[in-house]
Length: 355
Ligand SMILES: Cc1cc2nc3c(=O)[nH]c(=O)nc-3n(C[C@H](O)[C@H](O)[C@H](O)COP(=O)(O)O)c2cc1C
Image 1: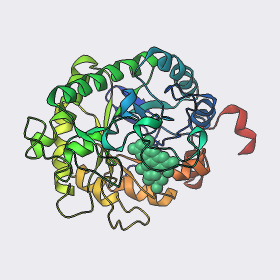
Image 2: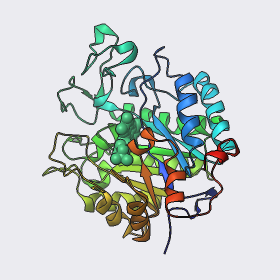
Image 3: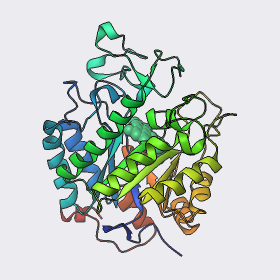
Image 4: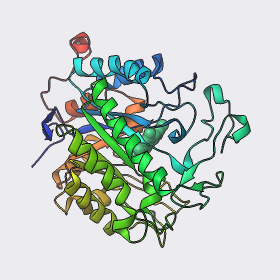
């Protein structure tokens, strides 16, 4: 049976294990220019030194108005690429593969981060206070945030262009992987879900229509960057009647692989308030549903112990991702390997005396 400490490949990329770090926004760009800072260098450096096989950095905006908050990182200009490069180089020096999650927040853009330069304000940043008019699939207001404007067909095509341009910038920065963020209620999820997509152009309609922008983005990145591994993150259920279902997600996952993606991550929710049965491994069944389609899948969500992670990978899911466990202890992958009694070479030489 497969173990979390076993290597795997994503396209041509070798990963030293199956314990991946989930993307986590740091909201730490106090200059509001999308350029990663000292915080990002130290934070991602610690995670890369902690033994992970694949570190995917936070939701990073493909365009300024795609930022969740003004404190988000970006990858729409060369200054940002230059600042990502040393983070990527350090991860490589530690033996970790590193990816970037590409995002457009749509109706969930232009919000306050709740700390840092933004102070403790919450909700939407008004346009006259440095925010901007958001765009979405339709003009449906979500989560009590400011009302978005329905993007035109041409605007959505320009957003697809920006995703592809961001993938090129990711490669220029040295990233090994791009992750297309189609989960957690952001723009690509706003398009996928019938709750928020009431369009009648080619980006709306049935599931295939609602998946068009996501699949266009994947297909174009694949065509232009044939070597680059692509992960797609889905919210595999909206946990709400009339929303995305696990079967819908499995279908979209299969289409995404057909369009050139290499793996799908099964997350959930984020579009509407819902009663989510949060508990250990509460999203694993969603990953198993997608993996049943023959898709290389990662599971995420309160995967907190080595034993639990082993059972998930043994069940046919390719990898686990950890979020908060890694925030508490950036060396969780090393700790788990040791708990399993595995003899691994992921401990930095500088730290060997601690083990
Ligand atoms: C501080 C924080 C920031 C997050 N930011 C992102 C993000 O940028 N992109 C994303 O897809 N998910 C984000 N998430 C969700 C995580 O990637 C992960 O799916 C979630 O925390 C569940 O995994 P866990 O139980 O191991 O923490 C974030 C979670 C946390 C705790």
